[in-house]
Figure 1 (cartoon, rainbow, N blue to C red):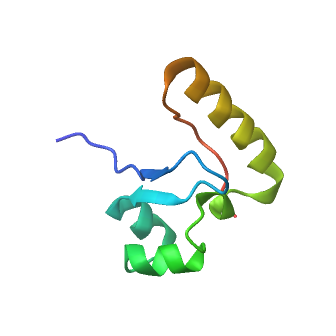
Figure 2: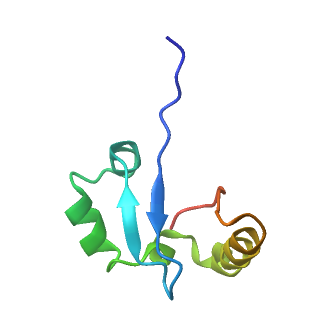
Length: 79
């Protein structure tokens, strides 16, 4: 079977992008034992995960894609 393990994380479209969901693969890739541990580490806000140098660009892409397609999909560096 050919498959790729992918990390998926989702947030609300509000300031800081509060955590909505995160899958096990994402947690495992980053070394977290649970969603609760991850949420506590980031203070519940997904933008904390994004590398500081990329936050402005990622925010712009989120706004653009949500406006055009109603969803966001992207790649970015983590802090």
